[in-house]
Image (tube, rainbow, N blue to C red):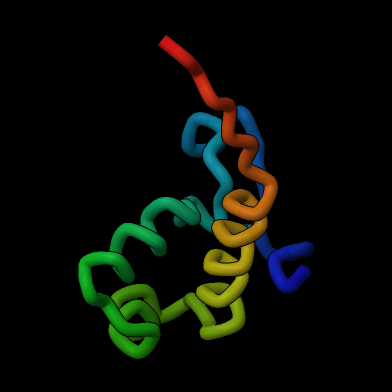
Length: 76
């Protein structure tokens, strides 16, 4: 998994949300910005201390979460 070593969770940082290691930038922020049309180039310009590898780690982390999602059918 490409996100290992890049994404951390700490209950005392950003309410325990997954963040890029060594920053307070959440995976949620990166995914939200990209869903709004932000490119990797834009994100690196907006957050100059970020790398393309860190941004890709956020995408990989989100994919890993989705792949492990469990769907429970409810009948009414």
